[in-house]
Amino acid sequence: MDPQSALKAVPRALGVKVGMLLAATILIAGGFVLYVLFARGTFEHTQKLYLVAGDVEGVNVGLNITFSGFPIGRVRRITLGEDGKAKIEIAVREDDAKWLRKSSVFTIERGLVGGAKIRVYTGNLQDAPLEDGAVRPVLRGGTTQGM
Image (cartoon, rainbow, N blue to C red; front, side):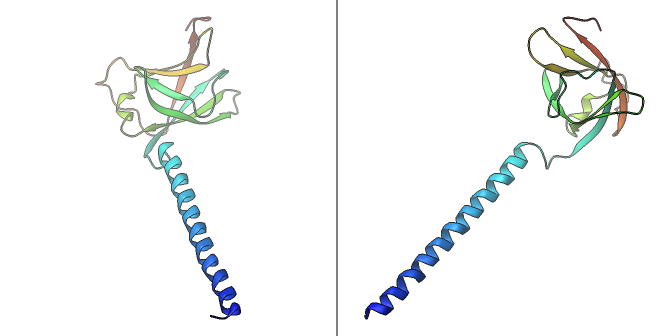
């Protein structure tokens, strides 16, 4: 084997290895992105619900909405309406939407320590289910103020 053919063979083998490493890196990065999207619930079917409140201090996008202490959805967007009231868009997983009824009460609660919490209280699970896209008022409450 002459020296010139040996020099040509090394870069080709190195190029194949670099190509394989690049392909593996892209596959791992793509898998990680899909895993994160799946873990954050991007592919879950959800029901939208809109809460209207005069004050949304402490409420942030991504905040969980809880029913009996269990997270059933999260805040997706907060906008200010023409009437000066805040409109909170929440997404509730379709599996958990069965807990939301027309008689459900939504509250934003703030304690002395910690952030705000949005909670759902349903007194009668026999009431009609809350439809997709429903607009509901939200009450403000916590340890420092009455409901």
